[in-house]
Amino acid sequence: MAGRASAGADALGQQLAKNAGGAFFICLAALTALRLAANAYANTDLFFDEAQYWFWSRELAFGYYSKPPLIGWIIRGATEICGQGEACIRAPSALFHAGTAFLVYAIGRKLYDARIGFWSGLTYATLPGVSLSSTLISTDAPLLFFVALALFAFLKLRESRSWAWAPVFGAAVGFGFLSKYAMGYFLICAGLWLLWSRESRAMLADSRLYAGLAIGAAILAPNMLWNAQNGFATLSHTADNANWGGPIVHPLKALEFFGGQFGVFGPLLFGVLLAFCANWVLSPEGRARAGETERLLLAFSVPVLVLMTVQAFLSRAHANWAAFAYIAATVLVTAVLLRDGRLRLFRASLAIHIGLAILIAAGGILAGRLSFPGNGDPYARILGWEALAKSAAAKAKVGGFGAIATDKRALTAALLYYLRDEAIPVVAMRDGGPPSDHFELTRPLDAKTPRPVLLVSLRDEGPAGSRSLGAEMIAAGPSKSRRIYFHALAEPAR
Image (cartoon, rainbow, N blue to C red; front, top):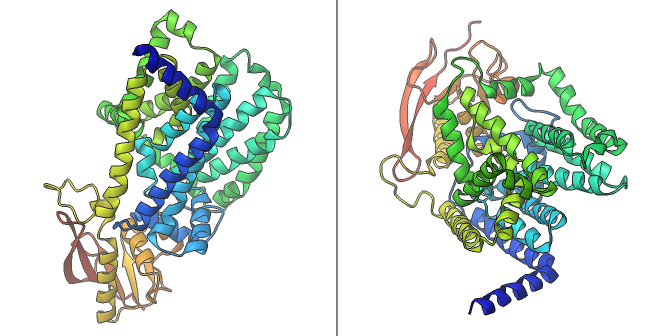
């Protein structure tokens, strides 16, 4: 019986090796179609970050306050094709993750074989973090695509003397930085690898590598110029996100971040990654068994996890900040599990991830229709924004207001998106200090704002001289709601 099972597995492996590309394309196309369909029927509003990115797409530039510009350009391209709806705005995310999965397949195939490539690509496509990210538009989706492309091009440069991959490598690095400055981790990991690997160290003297980096720098240059012209707003915001002020020890934050990786990468896969790293550090046999390929994949994953855990310990770090690591880690863990014959563990992990992918896709469709106990509704953050905007517009119309002001970025973004077809302008109040978000930088409440002005706020106390116009509860799903307050702002002194 065992012999027949082993023979069957060998036959399946041989068949997969022959048709890996076609089989992977079919699986990936089906999964991507499911995600696009789920987004099309989702019952969720845009999260305020998504709404902000959409607003950027209406005012194309080489930079924005909190992020580089590529996300705005991507959304603009999508909306030119299929309109301004939520599903269209979110569609590029699923497509970018599909492209990344294909590149992970190509990396696994190059470093190992077609079988490892197939399962690596499918594993990445079904990671819990990827399934969740595919339901919204964020900077992570294009970033991970360009990380994977840069790694594949880097491998191509390593194995040949051709110049063909130098511009591909440069474009991937440049557009990766235009997606998110976390692309800088790639340069750190590549530098560490080239210093670590005797076999690859010759690349430090390879002119193609520096030509690629020069191309990347040229692509990034307009964004750096925009930053220089705008007080280095994006770079300053990125530094502020590190939040190194105040107490410098946050062990619970580090544990929270570390625990979050079991959710992003998957509980079994992250456990295997930790076990492999521990074995490599503690066991001479483990180090001897890990070849050049495994060391390369470690170099492009573990440093980011370590850096982000330290960042969380010193201040804070969101779980997705380490997503960069899982391009290389996916190939590494898949190869280790299949090499060591841990097929049951691999299949269990894949089954869990596929189940979560289906659950996440269905969850968006059922959002707002399911009741959760207490305040546990996970969809409350992306429900109720359209209703809030329409309530504000109705209040402004009845009161004869010339503009709507807000005192919070989330409200500004939501109102700008959901009142996009309304004539009334939406502006952001500033507290007298420097701008703290993109709207305060580009759409501030000032002397040019049409009067009178309605303030929409989540705080019950308005600014000095304002007049309260009451409050309204806006449902954010069956079990949660937001209370919004309306204030008529005082007229400016003449």
